[in-house]
Length: 516
Image (cartoon, rainbow, N blue to C red; front, side):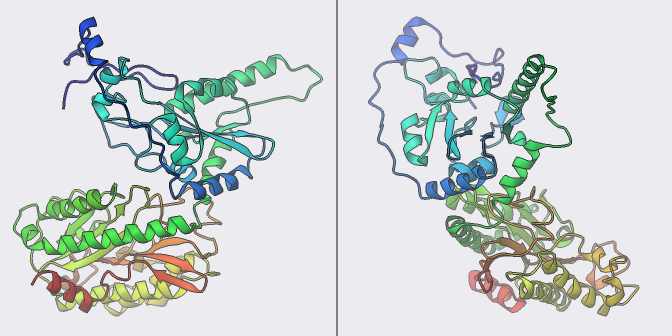
């Protein structure tokens, strides 16, 4: 990586990394004059409105109705430091993406502000517009300079693209100067901006207290009191995504289709993965290559867990061998440029054929998944999906002699011995986040009623640790999970990932077809 130049400070922007011990940017007047001239005209063509712009507008209308007279600040977030002067790949906050339609092309540091108006709110996006080529920023700012990160759009181009009012980030200072007790912010999105909002709210509260007459009603203000208005905003924005609109459903279909291609790639490359002492890394790399080619990235760290590693639920180190005779559990999903992600798991026999015990466990997990599918329909309570899968898990582990009680006894709320072999839940909502809508209230999520338009996973599993003395020796070290992405329709559930083989026989035929 080339040496970094100093960052230019901007309202709401933290100071950039120091480069006093790195190479420095040329600073002579001769250089400045020369670098600022001789450039072709920029392409200032205005793009058409992106497809999701009208859906984003409808979402803003829905959240606006909940907050009459209040200012809402939804930051996109900033790059997060990985080490020293290198950052993790930038990803905008999901609430910002949902309300603007901006995805992987979001400009870091952008902020959506919804100002109360006579009828609802007026929405404006603030972002750091590209610098002129006659400015130092053009070549000397590594965070946003065109020499460093490439050309950025103009205010007019972003406005045309998102169908939103757009202003320069410098104008955000006027918003911060107007902050009052009715101003809310998505706190987790941008720590620096949240601190500025908090300080502005405290100043407003202090000024209000000083100007309050004894006869006036008392006024108090807490940034994080018992009544956490910011937290309620985050909750409501999360609940706004529980039911997907037509655009979101289309994106989920595309994300699942791309992920299916990624699984095909992995199977084709299994012979190479088997030959490497860290074959799990090769599996991960092959899938991630598809994610970068067909999408923005992976929606979460890929799990490529071979052999007993499949019993470790979030095995992402992926540094083990892929051994013939073992199973490999692959939990992976491609995130599109819109940020919508799939979340699929398949468990494959490394040499293409299940052993009798592996097949027995695999088909029990599939039976649990099918039981969950059967109750996933409008009007059912969400937690019943998990309960249906657990009934199968309890019954099968009891039949195999693993439980000290009957399946019926294990299923009692005060017991749960069968959960030793599947400690995770069966389903979670899916969308912009792999665990979408996570801040929603329990009565709308776990205890909520399933509605048409919801998208969630069904992913039961069985995991028999290699040192678990409660299971027969032949089961130890076997881990199986089958995960599909489900769209609730008006009369049932559609398995969006149904094209990816699920039964043991289908999986064996899949591997044979891709490895002739």
